[in-house]
Each structure stands twice: as structure tokens, then as C-alpha cells.
Image (cartoon, rainbow, N blue to C red; front, side, top):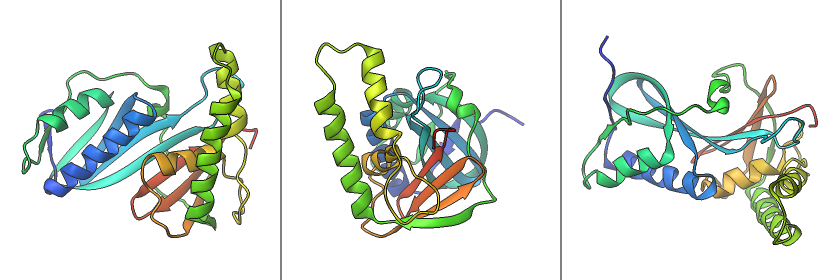
Length: 219
């Protein structure tokens, strides 16, 4: 089977949605995106936060959007967000063919993606609670980090804020970092957000996308 060189998105609106998703992800953490295409469905994963060193309390938190393709494809690759953003920017208004970047990147989080099945509903959280928690956490980190702080101090403060569980009617603890991811990626739609669990993974799902959390032992 020849290697896929490009993805044919379903329409121009899907291209615009992907452009927005990539742009928001770059603003939060300009790292990589994992593209997983199977048949006529594309799943795009980005990482909003992850442990930077052994023992750090921050869980791995991913954002994921699924999008329809006009032509079936089989793709599994991890590339830089910048390379995808560049190709999306060069696409004309009605262009739906997304050339795939030739250079892959190595990201540990992309090697341990969440399961596709086995999810059990574990409660729900309100969009208001998530938005307030995200904005409060951003403010706490900004106020707590001294200007001259080194990276270990900054990462320690981030761990304390984003690794702490949210207060809400969910049967399993959801870290505050999930709220940051949902707000940063524009996933909050004003509706209650159902929470699902599968093994060590949690999933917060809205009409706009999914936040996926691989919880550590601290939670």
C-alpha cells in the first residue's frame, strides 16, 4: 500500500476547524500533533501538559478532535504543530487537501494514547465550574511564580495548581489541568460536561472536542 501523502478533508469548514484547533493548541503548548486516520475519520491529538520530570504530579492531558475525511486514509504519525499550521495556512479558502509533513517528531505522550472503547460514565461537571477553575488556575500560577524563578520552581508550582483535583459531582477525581485544556482549546459549549473513565484514563467530552487525562498515582 503506497504511503499516504495527503489527507482529503470533508469540506472547507473542516479545514477551518482544524486550523482553529491547531492554532489554539500552539498558543497553549507549541509542541506536536498526532494524526490518526482510519477510514473516513481523522482524530487529531495534542498535548496540553505532561510530567516534565520523574515524580511530578501533573498528569498527561491531551486534547482530541475528530473530523470527517472525503477520502479514506490510514495514517498514524506525530508531527510538529508548526508544520501542520504552515500547510493549513497555504491552503486556499476552498482547498481541502492537506499535505502531510514528511518529518515526524518523537513525543512520549503520543506512544500511549487512550483506548477507543471500554468507557464508563463517571459523572459530569458544569462548563461554568471548568471555566472558573481554569481562569483561577492561570491567575494562581501567574501570581505565584517569581520573575527570577528557575524552571524547577515554575514546574513545581504548575504541578500544585494543575494536578489538584477539581471539586464537583464526578465519581472520580478530575485534575484542574483538564479545565485548562477544555478552556484553552475552546471545547466548552455552555453545557454540562460528562466525565467518562477507562482504566487510568478519564475523558471529558463536549460537542466541540474531548479532553483526555492519564492520571497518575497522586490522583
